[in-house]
Length: 150
Image (tube, rainbow, N blue to C red; front, side, top):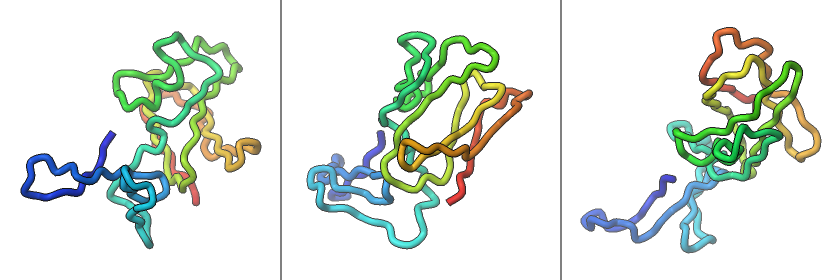
């Protein structure tokens, strides 16, 4: 993961103060939890933060122990989550909880693109709504960029 450091520019190792990016548009001083830099006004547009990175993930199926749901959020391009073989009409789910924040889009990189999928969201963990739906993927697109309405 990336970190921001504040220190003397003339020193080779300028890691005097380590900052961490939070999911709520802030940068927090890592060793003093009460100090944050906050962004006022328009949200960051030049920086994309992977809010799923390191979050707890769950799935209704996994191919094997090397392809569990946590592999989709481990910051490694060489690992991925894979479900077991899916029968026609069977539903397989993968979910991740995000920090309290405003998610504007979701990017999915598919190792094995599905024929169809739904992106569902919830604010309370109980009531789900479909934010995006693909009923047919005949070209087997390897990536999905899904813009979410505010």
